[in-house]
Image (cartoon, rainbow, N blue to C red; front, side, top):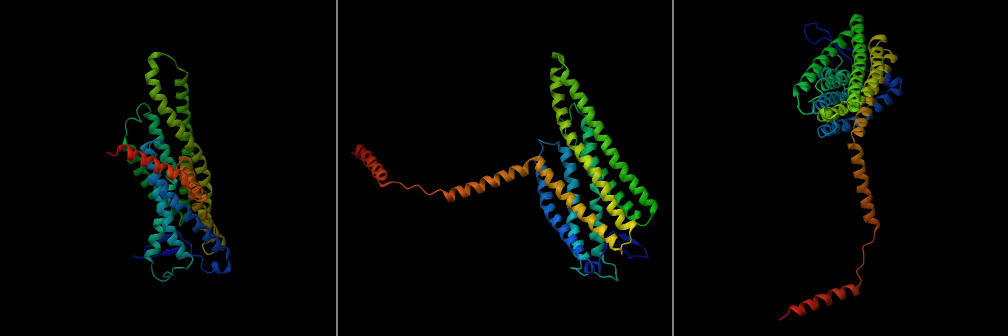
Length: 345
């Protein structure tokens, strides 16, 4: 772990572990760093593509939900991009100053950790947006209500920064560690409970509207039923994401705590858990990004287009050019000669 005192004896904690001699003693650590770098390079193109694709997915998701997803995905993408520079320092590809305060290392790791914290608020933010959609279900699709996405994104940023500060304090105090674990468990538990309640509520209303009959309720029912079906579809997807998010958070907190709290940073076990945490995060983001692209459908359309294009090129290469017989050429010439003779004065 790196502890630095840049100004007036103020101790700043930087959540990074430099393996040092461990890389020479245990070559398997190089494999872990290599796999993490591969996961990051796989996830980054997908993340940029997903952010772009979401902007065109207004038919699949509400615009407020799209903005929330884009902000959180952009933050996590910045985190993974900055992690590449951190890997270069940790593996000694780029040498750092061990005696003096290294501004580049501090900023890189701080950006990496702070922009990684929105992973904790991404699913709760999406669930909150769906709660607003359920609250204003009668006209949520008609009225944009952009203030909802601005409010949720603003609160998410504040919570992410607060969680980052808490994580830094937790690595230096057992009390703050317990508070951080408690907050993490509460966020994950409340997220699961909230999305289940919203989903069950909308399903119950939709079932009630489906069973109703009568001329007086037809116009209102058709409009409300359409918006309920959209909300039920998205909340069902969020339910699966929320369960996966809770399981992911449990193991993620375990790896992070083991690396910085349970084991000493100079211990190879602590360094192993640190490498596992980074691999776990990079792999999770890669799976999430490409799974969302597949679910939205753009990845499937792109693959079908590429496959059809390749098949078309191969087909053109295999087919032989048709040969026009001399007999047909003479017939065409005779036809034009007859026309010319008929119109000649």
